[in-house]
Amino acid sequence: MNPVPELAPQLKQLRLSGILDSLEARNRQAIDAKLAYTEFLALLIGDEVARREQKKFSLRLRRAQFRTTKTLEQFDFERLPQLNRALVHDLATGRYLQEKAPVLIVGPCGTGKSHLAQALGHCAVRQGIDVVFTTCASLTQSLNAARATGGYERKLATLARVPLLIIDDFGLKPLRAPADEDLHDLIAERYEQAATVSVQPSHLDRGEPARDDGAHQFEQVGTYAIQFQTARARRRVQGPGSGRMRRARRIGRGRRAGAWPERQSPAQMVGRPRHQAHRSAGTEVSGARTARS
Image 1: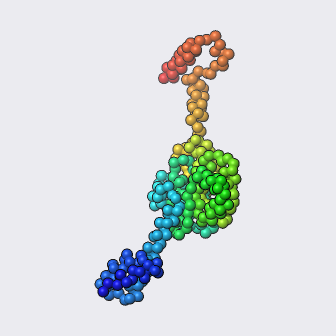
Image 2: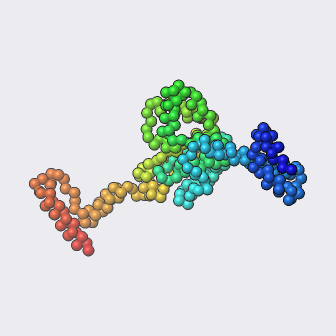
Image 3: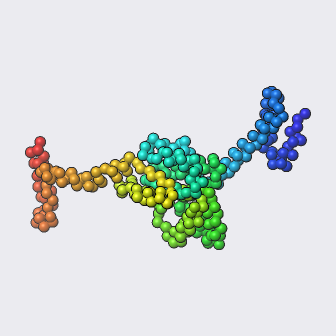
């Protein structure tokens, strides 16, 4: 006797229709292994629990609106040896979610900041936490659109209740009113109420110094700060100087050694054709090189 046709409507009424997917396989397993009725029932309940958890995970992952599926297992730590790997793995445990503490990820473009932010969000989704991933521009646009339709307060309250909000490209472009005020209101509403991860680009790739003092200030107010820094940026920040400065020093050394002509003022160049000035300068340089060799 096949009990499936009789059980199907009852399981659907109890919202346990997922058991039908594994009922036949589990029934055959129970017969072959001579399992007790309670063991057979435990297998079916375990399948249903796992099925529901997977369904919830897929729903949270879809609501998070990640750009792509980026996980922590896919992140290349070897490419960034200066990255605080211990802090990243500590954040992956979700302790900052319980503390409702903000997380700041800052660094040059193209170093993997967005990947890491989405990976932390993926870890939170695995732990059963609702996540929303958005860019700063999209976030302010949605708040502005809600204001136009009279639903600003409702939209703000919805975003303030999200357990984890990840804002990518934070500070990438200057904000104008009322976007700056909207973002300030949202951050104020979420302060000490929910965790927020903000991804901010720095200008290390343009040779500007790292702002370590800002990171320390964030840590003092309870913010976890992760700073990305590439090898090229480290050379520019910690190295002897920018390319223009290094070139100026080389020219200065050459002049002291007699290999470079002294710079003449515009008054000294008056009355001399440009080609003669360049020819004489080239003669001096070549003569100095010949004498040195």
